[in-house]
Amino acid sequence: MARYSNAKEVLPAHLLREVQKHVEGVLLYIPSADEHRRPWGSLTGLRQELKTRNEAIREEYRRGAGLEFLAEKYHLSYDTVRKIIRPRQG
Image (cartoon, rainbow, N blue to C red):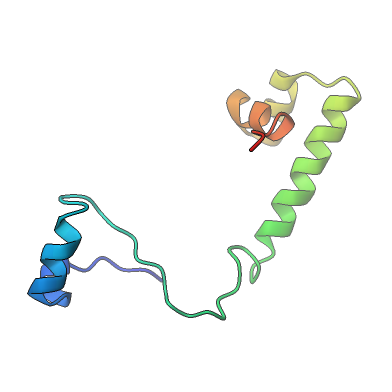
């Protein structure tokens, strides 16, 4: 579990000054250097659950279900359902 640490207490002064050149006064997440980390949600199965749910939402939409109906059925916001149905191209 990630925890909050004050950079002033954990980084050498020269490194802190270097970081402050790029960002100051914000919370900054520094990911683990562990190359063997598993992707988000892979241990709990949540990633697959969301993929399955989103596929079901898209299929129901293709069959004529409305965005408001889907939002209520899946307990999601209208905008979230819209993003699932029409993902950004990029």
